[in-house]
Image (cartoon, rainbow, N blue to C red; front, side, top):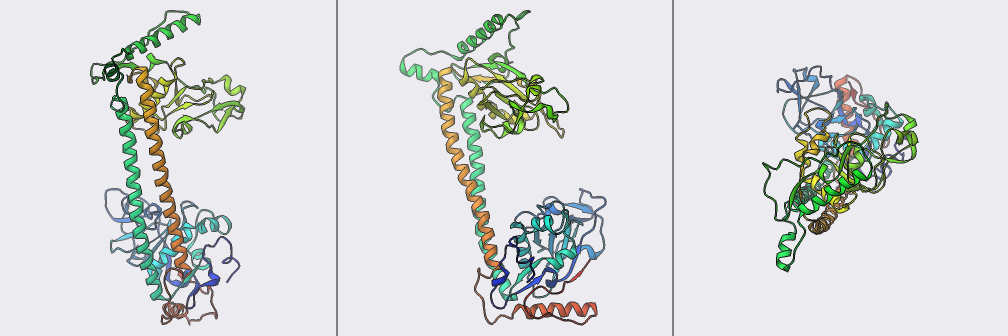
Length: 514
């Protein structure tokens, strides 16, 4: 073998293959290897021939025809046939090497981002596709692009003459494919089950939040007060206390002008609330303002690198309710053109990730793509509002314009009507929500871990397969070197040249390429 084949980046142990196996270049296994053609004009109305592109090979090594562009018919030389193998040769280094077998008689063409491999007689199409796709899964082609060839693509010649494969006898190829597909079928069922669990957990999470803001998750304060024979403070009294405190603080700060009462929401078309609840607007409950980042360009180095945390929409989206980390900081210069919001501020995104929410666990600045809500008197209210806005996320998204960069504005949030429970009920609501969401997160983590383990199991199965450890060998099978000699002889006959084979195991000549 060559030095390159023994590289630590090659995932198959080619030095210890079973008796009867051979090592050969990809080109030694194929009648021909050919790249596709540039599409020119695609159409989406189904006229012409489906023109396959990298996205039509999924990460599982399967052909995906759910999104297909069409082109006018081209020559038969650029068509796919049942038994071909389709290899992604370009588009992105991390995607180069995705491979699938063509097991349909449907008329298909393929783009110049793809390479068609037509296996020689005795090379199982699915075996060849599985082995190449496994090399992609194991990162071999990414390494090859970075170190050995053009980072943007792998040409037909490079694929044919520099990529080695383990080749078993034909009957063993078929036994290996049958075993792989049996294992993968069971793993697919397990993944489908875990994905169904994930969908159910997502729905359950939404139902918990919806029940909470509709007064159905815990007994209401009115119900408990009646059962216990006591009085309680309704939400209307809580709202009035918040409004009075905001008015008092405004006057204490010595501001000029006339104090403007926050506008209450329009409740004419809103449903009836549980006893003791009331409707309120966000401006009634606290300060609601956009963040600031006035300086342009926003990546000016003078803005960054100081002691003041600076968060953006992505950090709010990833926060799971509380923003505890930050990736950037502002300098004094950055702070001067922004605003430092205090710990406990509720952040609401109005661009990119619409209505994602998170509560600051530290003082921080943020840009005008984030709105801050601040209520210093009732910290639990802020947490309740964060959970409430999660239930309204889909509704708020409907206000976003149908543009590439969706966004809502401050007025949209000012008009949101909040179903406000009594303060004592908020305590129970938030506690019960946190308890149930904690259980949901644990189950989601278990499902994600299960899916990740299945992905690793797939790679292990493929590694065992291509090292001869998945199925038993049959000493009566025709050795792979005889198979390879026959493919070379057939190819030489078509090319009008004498056939020849190097002695010993290892890659030899390559197929015709185009």
